[in-house]
Image (cartoon, rainbow, N blue to C red; front, side, top):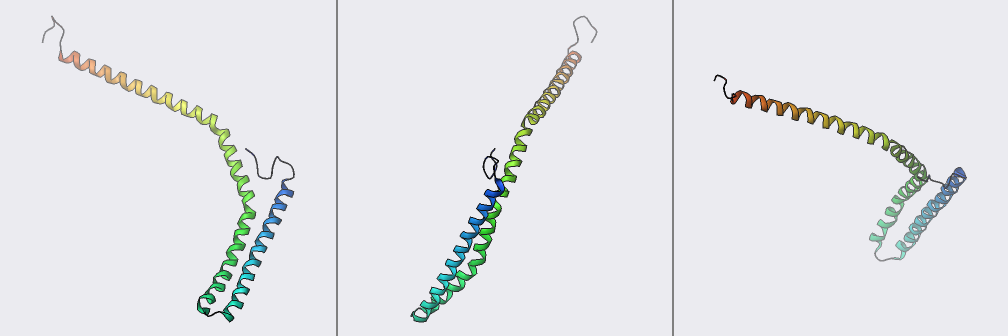
Length: 139
C-alpha cells in the first residue's frame, strides 16, 4: 500500500507544506466568517429586520472555533492515514498464517466428525447384533 506523502521521498517536507496550506485555508475561512459578521453588523444598523439579523453574527462567530478544529483535524489526517495503512499492511502479511490456521481447524473438525461418525456407526451395528441373534444360536 502507498503511504501518505508519496513514494517515500520527502515526507516531512510534503507534510509541512500540507499543514501550511491547511493553516492558510483555515485562517482564510476564519477571516471570511469575521468579515461576514462585520458586514451583518453594518446591515443591522440599517435593516428593518434587525431581530433576525442580530442572530446571524452570533451564529457565525460561534462556528469559528469549529472551523479551526476542522483545520486541526485536516492537519492530522495524513498521520491517521499512515497509521491505518501500516495496520492494513500488517494485517495482509498475516493472511497466509490465518489460512494455515483455518486449514488446521478444518482438518481437526473433519477428523472429529469422522471419529464421531465411526463411533455412531459401530454403536448402531452392536445394537443390531444384540437385537437379531444369528441363526442357530440360542435365544
